[in-house]
Figure 1 (spheres, rainbow, N blue to C red):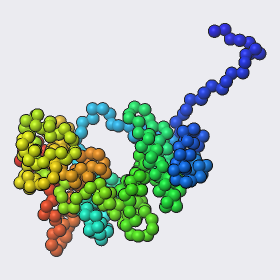
Figure 2 (figure 1 turned 135 degrees about the horizontal axis):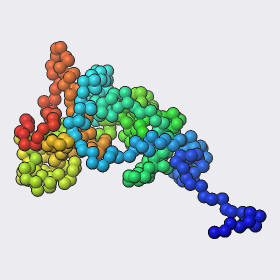
Figure 3 (figure 1 turned 30 degrees about the vertical axis):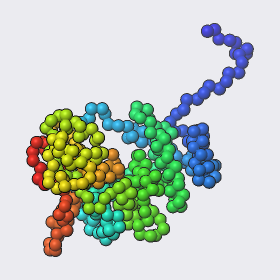
Length: 365
């Protein structure tokens, strides 16, 4: 096209500027609309709400870390387990249990959740406070709310809900949102609660009028126990039983189809070829055949109860749940062995650890 003379050319409209990640969040229309909607829902001042959001900054590292692992990465229960069931973490777990024994006992009595499970969750989540996360939660959640990276299923709506929950909780506690630190996904404190979980499940376990999951061990322990209770924890029920899976591929596939959701009675599982212990056959609730891949080796299997499923509400992963269960149990066993005198407090109903093994080997009850 031949260009017109500059003197004759009309004044062009300003070209639309491409949206760069982050920028000034306070000037972006979708952020202004979000601030208005949040303020309207809670009876806040819209400009003050926008002012809080304007303090957020885009974090490229958060956008990188939220991406899934490379396709084809094999799952390996043995490798996963070894990350958590190791001497230094076991020692830290014993120190945490010893320092907070009274609170753990109180939580167990009130919510019915074993101390070992609470200890296991905190140990896997943050290594007993060593790994709390150094990201400003406001920045992380704003990044994932308004600049969620392409290349995976868009979860920006979920993170906008968490960003709103952060503002609600911070206001309730009289805290500045930009001062709160956590993980790249916005999880906070020793138990790594997302802001919405803090609002729904965190408790002021020591009655001081505040919920503090970063420094108050009473609130940390009580909140973990309350979370599990609210998600259906049944006191006294084991999390899983040993099982040999069906040798028949069709029967095994049928039992594995519901994944970690308990869907079969013990008798249903036995009828499809699974070999259960006598104690598992006496169980009256549903079970799930849970497979734990071991890289190139044969998978390990357990029969998960509704309590196993409850643990996965903390993190939707059978590997996570089993690591939590076994870390707590190993810490408990280490404490018992360290006692010079006194009666053992070992739970006689405890299920043995799931070591990586071929599925055709018998498992002790």
